[in-house]
Image (cartoon, rainbow, N blue to C red; front, side, top):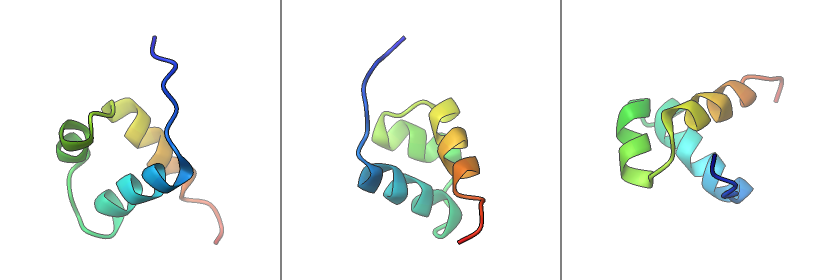
Length: 50
């Protein structure tokens, strides 16, 4: 298992590409080199009250 950490800004941009720009999780995962599982976790973490 990888212990690589991503900055909050990196995560926010990745989530923005999926939620706001409509890219698929698979596309963002491939382009950024982040697992789809991580992206799904990040997106679900953004679902709370703003």
